[in-house]
Image (cartoon, rainbow, N blue to C red):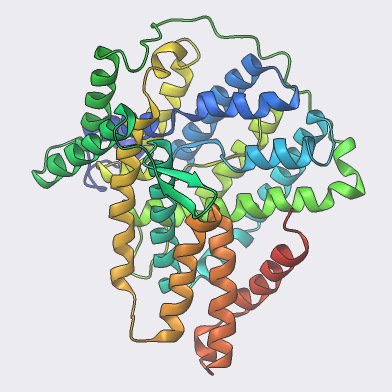
Length: 431
């Protein structure tokens, strides 16, 4: 049955590998179960309900991706989008969280329409291959900064913007040890190297008393405080037009960037760099975004941490299904999921960053008109802490440089239209 549903042999994988990949992806992104309620809770939303909504949205989205698109990509409420929801729309602009959820719903409907009419697919296929490689590498660098920050190896510094953390503390030391362990195991071709690294560091942390063992079972809180509490009518306020556009814009390009990066890492793209079942993948995450807003959470999106599962061999939707099941189980085993410390998953993300940065080797560095926008794209993602911003800078720089150097054949109508939209977004709608 599994072979028929997911075409395991055709994708050169098996059930065991897909389960390990699903476990790895889940452990790499399980932090969202605790971070999302913490952030959205600042708007006045019930944290327990948000926790349940996060579990359900991630489960539904991941299962949809696995069943409809057969891709090893997991979904959950997105980081960055939840911060925009809380700190900009609610706390800064003063809208109630119910109205903000309405804005998420409207953006998800627009997102769905773009997917149905294959506009998003057209947009992604218009991205030149060098920019696709740059996007994948940029996501890797973005993961690296997230991992290093989470491990306490990189910290903020008022004088130099960033600085090195205290490497004598247990957290950074365990993260470094975990990274070395994963690299060594991978070099020796040990199956599941990333998962082993995460579990070993978690076990050491618990046994030495550095992190608590939260137990095993807890009853899930009620979803009632956030379920169907969105205010769609209030979201049609003229002042929220730019907010809806921002939700839509970031979701479209965060998803697109993640799809490109993860499928390239999994070796699922064809010779032209196109993603198989892309239309179905886009449809899956747009439906997931709709469900998320109804349940009571910020925009649900494809998670870049899916690269961790792809790195250990995840190739089909069975990986995503495993992640969805684990998110459902998290409703009852939240204390157990919370026992994995950040510095145990940080080495996995850093290792994936190393793998994804390899895409830069495919670039023709002798052509400065290509090398410049590629470099800008890759660097902008970690330095602006946004995949969408990196893509925006990449499109703008690619179009301007190619136009001014007379290389019109390397441009297409979609690139020109999107460049104009990116300029508008960054110049006037960068909330």
